[in-house]
Length: 89
Image (cartoon, rainbow, N blue to C red; front, side):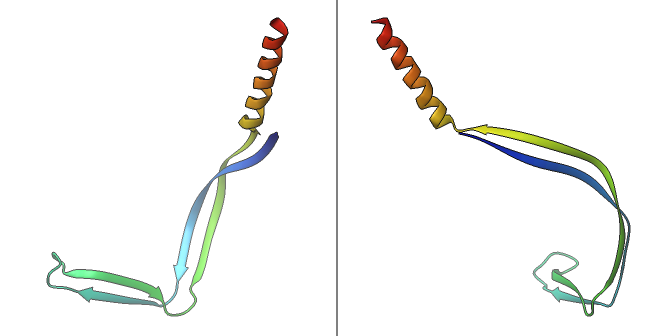
């Protein structure tokens, strides 16, 4: 009838991003495309790149959420209403 969930919302900043490696650039040209006539540009690393960065946590929020199954609650209140109305007559 009841359930609970816990969520964490974390804001982080990525600082001093450093990427070093060999890239392959592929340009696909098409004269029907507007200037500079590139219809597709593909960028990929030829070998595994060296990646270095620093992460700083800015803010952390913890959220507790409680859920109630409304169908069970609705049938429960309906039964109480019927019991109360039948006792009145």
